[in-house]
Structure formats: C-alpha cells, structure tokens
Length: 532
Image (tube, rainbow, N blue to C red; front, side, top):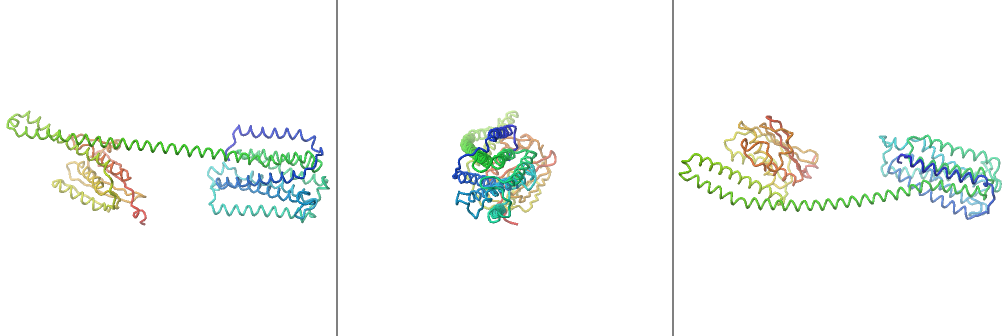
C-alpha cells in the first residue's frame, strides 16, 4: 500500500513493454494450429486456482491489518477467478469426461471463460473507484482495522457471496446454457463470439484506465496495471486473434493469464519475506540492545555499590579525627590562658564550630550512603499518623519555634515506614527552617492522581528561583549559604533517593520571597487504585 516511487514505475512499465513485445511477436502466429495437449488444461487451471487462492488469502490478511475496503474487493476478485477457473476446468471437454462435467454443454466452457475474464476486471473497477489507501490513512476512520469478530463475519459473508456468484454463473453456463447465445461451434468461434469477447475486453480496458487515473498511485495500483495489461493480452490471444482452441494463440494467451495471476502473488510473497526478515533483524537488534542495557545497568549498580561502600568507609574513618579535633578544642577552651586571650578564644571557637559542622556533614553522608545499601521493608503506611508524629517530634525538639501546621487527609502508602518518616522529617523541618524568623505556616496535603499518591509540603517563607530547582536534589548543593541558614546539602538528596527507591519521583516549585512547594509521589497501593 506504499506510494509508488519512480523506480517502481520504471519496473512496472518495463514489464508491460516486455509483455507487449512478446505479444506483438505472437500475434502473426496466433492462428497457427498446435497439437492438442489435454493435460495442459487441468495443470494450467490448477496452478491458476492455487495462485489466485493464495493471493486472496494474503490480500485478506492485508485488509485485516490496514482496514482498506479495496483490499477486500480485490481478494474477492481473486477468489472469484480461482473458483471460476476450477469450474472452467471441470466443464472443459475431455478433462473429466468427454463432453465436460457438471452437465456442461458445447457452450459452457466458453461462457465460463467470459464470466471469469469479466469478473476480475469488475472487481478491479470497484477497487479503483474506492478512496485510495493513502487518503484513508490520513485520518478517515474507515481505514481502521476491523475488530476480530467483525472481520471474521465480514470475511465469511464475502466468501459466501463469491461462492454463490460462481455457483450461479456455473449453473447458467451449464444447466441454463440454452438461455445464452452460442459462441462456440466445435473448437471454432461463432460470429457472436466477437461481440461477447469485445464486451469482456472493454471491461478490462475500463479497469486499466481507472487505475491509470487513480491518485496517489500506490505500488499495488502499479501491480494491478501490469496484471490488467497481461489480462488484455490473454483475452486478445485466447479469444480474439486466434482461430479456436489449441492453436498458438490459445496456449500463449493462457501463459499471459498465468502471468496475470502470479504478478501480485509474487510481489506479496517477496514483501512478506522481506518484512519477516526486517522483523527478525529488528527483534535481534532490540534483544542485543536490551542485553547491552542490562549489562550497563549491572555495571552501574556495581559502581554505585562500590561508591556507596567507599563513601561509607571514608565517612566512618573521618569521624575519629573529627571527634579528636572537637575533644581537644573543648579542652583548650577550658584552659584559663585561652579565656584570657581574645584572639585565641575566637580561633578555638571557629575550630570547634567547624568541627561540629564537619561532624554533622559526615553523619548526613553516612545516612545518605546507608540508604543505598539498606533493604526496603514494605508495609502499609498511614501517612496522616506518620506526619502527626513528625510534627510532634519537631515541636518537642524546638519548643520555642512558632509554627502552624495545616494537614489535610493524606492517602495511605505502601513503603518502608522508617524511610518515609525520614522523607517527612527532612521536608517538614526544611519548611519550618526556610520560613524565616516569623511564625511558620506549613500546609501539608495529598491526593490520589491516577496511579500515584502525590504529597505536598507548602511553606510561605524565603522561597527560591524555580530556574535552579534542578539543583535542590543534588548532593551538597544549596541555594543559600551556611551563614544564612545552617545545613549540609544532603537532606533533599536523601529525600530523592528514598522516594526513587520506592518507585516515585520528587519535584519542587518556588518563588523568591513567597515560599516553596515540595512534592513527591509514590505508586498508589492496589486497594487505592481499585477504590471508586
């Protein structure tokens, strides 16, 4: 159904020119008598019927995928030719019985040939009058593939209609042959044959003209043009330019008929083979990429584990010298001579504060590193109870800090309660800290959004520039200096690590001087998703 390219057109017209050249060479010899080969008819008709049946099945498969009605019409046309070819062979004199089977008379085979060679061009005409597949694909809902049940029912209906038409025409050509004008006299044609075969030939010409006028031209249209040209050459040699049965025109016309039957089939088979090859190659490429990604993920996990172990080891080893600095600094501060020297007292105080800050940074780094190695202990978590506990602990830790908390009902979560508590501690304590010296007003809310539980902590404090929001969750990254507000730059990175390990995400919005909103999401528990 792809749009034809210049190369496709060159191949199509090249095939037509070669066929026309061979046709021109056969025309002067069309009436040359040749030996009667009785086995030729059943062999030829069997090959023709098999080819047309396979083509019909492939076209129905394309119709199932693309949903274009023209494909079903063509499939019915090929099915019609296959069934009529079988009936034609059974009624041909001398193939089954001497006078032809199925109650055939001297006119039956010839009339079945006419029905056969008019039926397929009629299907092509209907196809050519339908909207091109490219136009359907650009937005018409008629191009959508039908549901399986509807496709099966419509296909069975189409097949039944074709079989009924073939049965009716076969009955007309055999049992009702007296109703039709005689077009055969022995193995020769009667004068009435010229009128009948000219009508059939004109139907094929109309089909070819409509295909030539069809825009945009698809590859299938070009293949049908080649088929119709071969079809015209078949009729001309077999029923117009020859003298009767078993002359050179009779045999040569059948070869053109076989060509018309196999052109589309050959291309469909080649395209299906190429499609399967591309599919196999794409599957192999996808599997190789998946294996490569898995290997890279394993390497990254190993590197992360090594980095976590290294960070934990370094942080643990640094605690001893920091404690020693703090201890000796405290001892020096207690000496009388240190108290009497103002500059010495100032320097020792700076050393002590720096050592204390370093110790807190090391503890935060240990906590961050520990999260990468600690297994998750998942269970249902009552978020409202957890938040109330965090708020109570903060009030107890800072009894003099004025803070007002507004907490709406929060959806429950499925996670590690201890780790989720750490998330709330960091977010709520940050909200209080960054609210400034005035009374803090903190809003905590949550809701179920799709398959996620989304939680928010809102403050009305210092805020931040949203352009720098991506830096907030990076390790040791701070938007405020330690002189402005205390902190190590680890808390929000720890929040992100915990939330991501739970399969969630974290983000922030803010405005300088107007506050900030920190949000995180967790996968909703199954019972929350199922609830109305």
